[in-house]
Image (cartoon, rainbow, N blue to C red; front, top):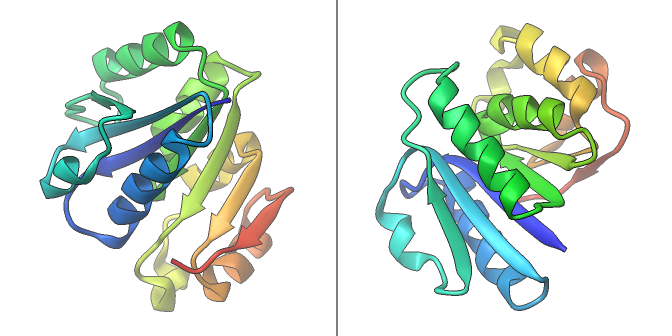
Length: 160
């Protein structure tokens, strides 16, 4: 099995730490563990195991076609089975899933403003949720909201 953790940055945040920890933990348990930072690198890059293959996209905008193409080539060339998208990286992951329909897409919802879910933009995530094979939620507020507003078939509550 080949699994790619997808995160927007490697700054010292909760979702970023989870992505790095998952990458490192999986490195000795599966065929290949990958981590891709889409927008920015950061201090957590030094925490990445030497056994994890790393990709930095340097994505400049939501529809950065160069970054999307680079990620798609990476997924295809490494024959990645599962993309585990953390937080807002679900959008680029959905585009990659559309280009690679057999790939499994997992979204890890780390939305930090769960007390303000009524203000959460939902149109894009609702559309993207059609492509999610599974969703992890970091709290029950997110789970309740998603089950009400998104197309969720399979999900798990998994505290950070």
